[in-house]
Image (cartoon, rainbow, N blue to C red; front, top):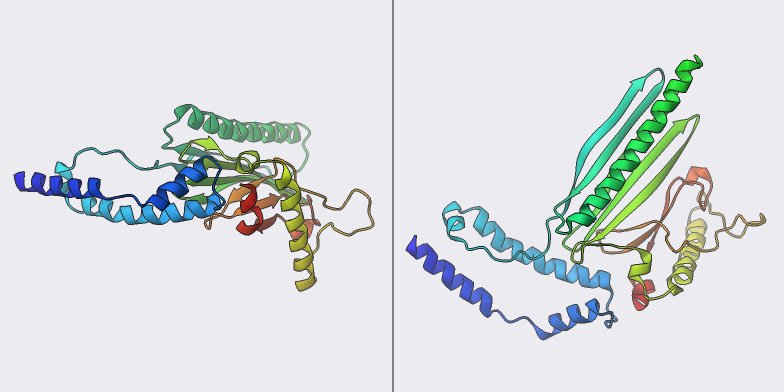
Length: 287
């Protein structure tokens, strides 16, 4: 045991003696105070590589119980935030099929924010479930046949050392169908909700991102005649003009901004849910 402690002490001294490169310190400080021209998404990616390297040290501890017993407590870099399934509300009777998954976020240090997010997600799920329970009762009361499906599920788009992006889907099918989405983007470091307004310095992002989306629409149509968007039409008020200030989005695994539209929002129904990945070079000057 004494030898283990001596080895640990030696390793800890070497760890504490490691110098942090000045350029890394500068990048982090500049990004935090909004002075850096480097994309925050790129910074996330670079720091993520460092975190992967630190994982090697963690693995050494996990595979050696004897060594783990002698390890002193040290501050943890970053938070282990994860999403789990809290519950499922379901009904399958008389032509009605309802299945609603309820996600729960765990591991945030800010328990108030964690509780607020979880309450909101559970409330939305319960409201949807109760809405369709009431509708089922109405059909039963009137002895009307029904065939309707309601499903809600979630998908973790990104879960790295910096960002958690969670999307909750709500799908309705009764003759025709429709799917809507709700987005939760969490800054793990600062434990705050990420919105477009917090990512960008001013409202220029609305016009700049909208312009890029229009360019992508035109390119997509020219390359694939089966694709169609509401642009350059003769119908007044139909064409896509610009995104909303609070447009739905998520951050993908490459730390890129993905702007999202629901079915029928900017294109015919057969196009389904529409997304546009915004290149970092388009938005980095506005960060």
